[in-house]
Length: 226
Image (tube, rainbow, N blue to C red; front, side, top):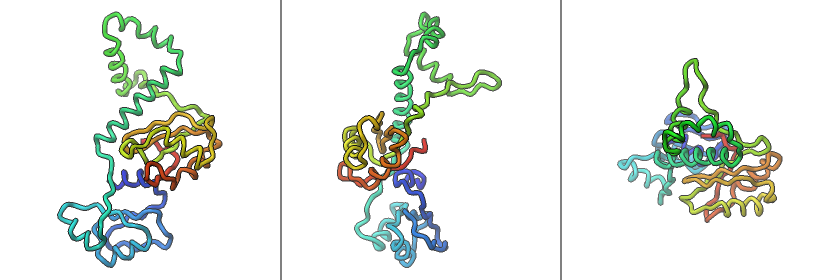
C-alpha cells in the first residue's frame, strides 16, 4: 500500500515514518506513517508535510482526534492494477500491429491459422511469450517505445474523469509544448502515461506537476514502469 501511495504522490524524497524514528533535518515531499502516531508525533510530522495514515476501522475514531475531518486517499485496488496491466499489454500489441510490417510473423503463424481460430492463435502466442524457456528460445520481446520519445507518468486517470484531451490541453497550456512534441496518451484507471519528445521531457514534467486537471492537482514524473 505504501508503494502504491508513493507512485500516486510522485514523491522523490518521502519520509516512511515508524514509531520511535527521528525526524529528518531536510524537509520530505511526503510523510507516510507506517505506524499510528501519538498526538505529539502527529503534530511534529504535520509540520513537515500532511501525514498519510494507513488505518484499520478500529483506529478511525482515534485518528479523528488527531485531525478532523479526515481526508480519504484512494489507492488503486488489485483489480485496478490488473486492468492497467491489461490495457498496457493491449496498447503494446496495437503499437506492434500499427508499426508493422508483420509479414514474417504472419508467415510463421499461417499454418496455425488453418487449424485454429485466429483469436486462439493470438492467445497461444501471448501465453508462450510469458513462459521463459530454459535453454530454448527466449520469450517474445515487447516492442519498445521510439528512442526519440519518453513516457511521463501523470497521477490522474479515468477515476478522475480525465481524458486524453484534458492532458493534451494541460501540456500545451501549462508546459508550452507543441502538438508535435506530444505522442500517444494512455488514460488508465488511476493514472495516465504520455509520450513526450525527449528534448521536451523536463518542460512537460514541470508544467504538469501541480497543474489542475478535472479539479485535481496532479503530480508528474518520468515513468519508471510498473
